[in-house]
Amino acid sequence: MTIDFTCQKCDATFEIDVQDLSDGSEKLVCTSCDAKAPANLVEDFVAALTEMRTQVAALGKKFSLAMAFETEDLEDLDAKADEEDEEEEDEDDLDDDEDDDDLDDDEEDADEDEA
Image 1 (cartoon, helix red, strand yellow):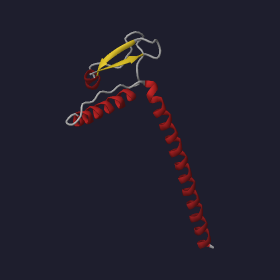
Image 2 (cartoon, one colour):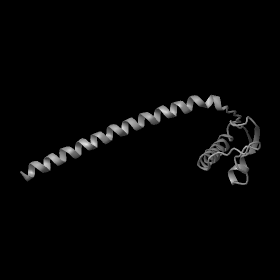
Image 3 (cartoon, one colour):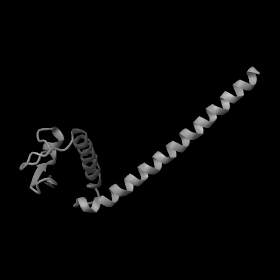
Image 4 (cartoon, one colour):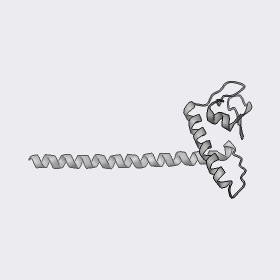
């Protein structure tokens, strides 16, 4: 299985075999301008591909499967993920504020006990 990539920097197109990417024998680097993906992003991508291949193999016992992903199709998912991350951060901030209030109440109780 191969994946076709188009470099955002120079618009060159190249393909990489998923197995070569997974085992580290090939790097995610543009063949034209040498633009590189960050290592942590590649690691996460390979992990996701490995998991997807495992699940597709399991589904293959019952169904044939063909997929195509276009970056533009996934931009909506990325935007939704960003919104969810922001909502979680807002909730965390609220939780922190509540914790701060609890600390203030504890300090007031301690002050009253001393008096």
